[in-house]
Amino acid sequence: MIHDLVTTNRSYRRFHQDRPIDEATLRELVDLARLSPSAANLQPLKYMISATPRKNEVIFPTLAWAGYLKDWPGPAEGERPAAYITILGDTDISKGFGCDHGIVCQSILLGAAEKGIGGCIIGSIDRERLRAGLDIPERYEILLVIALGYPSEKVVLDELGTDGGIRYYRDASDVHHVPKRSLDDVIVG
View 1 (cartoon, helix red, strand yellow):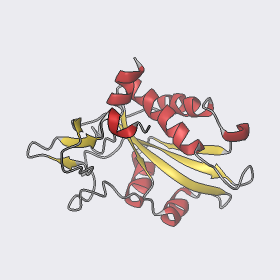
View 2 (cartoon, one colour; view 1 turned 45 degrees about the horizontal axis):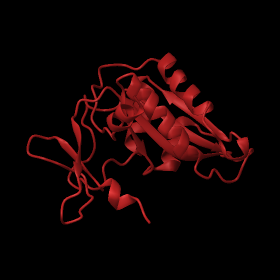
View 3 (tube, one colour; view 1 turned 120 degrees about the vertical axis):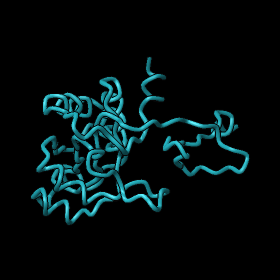
């Protein structure tokens, strides 16, 4: 059911790095993105996939992880993503990408969740370092990176506390908690 996929699709940040994701799986996920709606049907998004340790080592240090976890530098060796999909906007097709990259990220991550793969959408990117490391031509705007792997952490959804705090956190057992507003709080009128 879609409800189960949506609740399973969390922002996972720690993975079983030794469990590879093959290129065919990444291509299947990009195909879901390709088939997703696009404003004015321009289809300006392009994708770079990575599933090799060498290429992953170029991508990993260009990303910032978990802004609310100030003392956590990101996944340790052995917990890093097994694959990445870098989402690019082709400026030869369009100068603006609206919400297309958000739509395709959801399609990719729901497809990944169906396969037992977790992911994290990352927008905090050292774009120039990534551009240089992957030799990305200037015509492509680097929009987002999706980190993918088989999750090695537990992520749970919690009701928002009475203090209204929305910051995710890890408890003493290293379980990642994500507070969510109630349905009545998000419906207006």
